[in-house]
Length: 128
View (tube, rainbow, N blue to C red):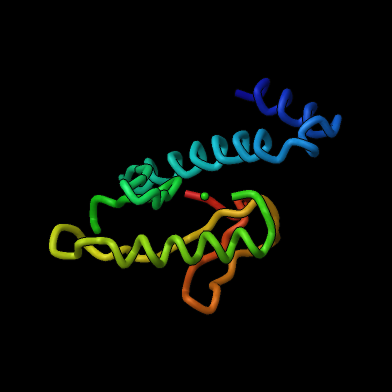
């Protein structure tokens, strides 16, 4: 696994991905979901993907047995709106209401809660 990170770092250091955000986003998303799975495993949970027939999609849903995007503020706002919409679609008679909504971002020194309660968390802040 260390070799994989070395390759990714070399590519980023050589600026090959800076002009190709979709590819960089794919790498980031893959690593984010991997890190989320490690956290979920430590908590006895699982990571799910959601896509419905209307096209509403959520890259990662942390489901605990006891009850992500690269870009700036515009994409974070878009993600917050999608998470609110997804939360409204949940049939709370069939499952519990989500404990929180979170967007994982590529950089930043600390996590914070947006005005609607959505957590904005840099990937470096995730820990089991």
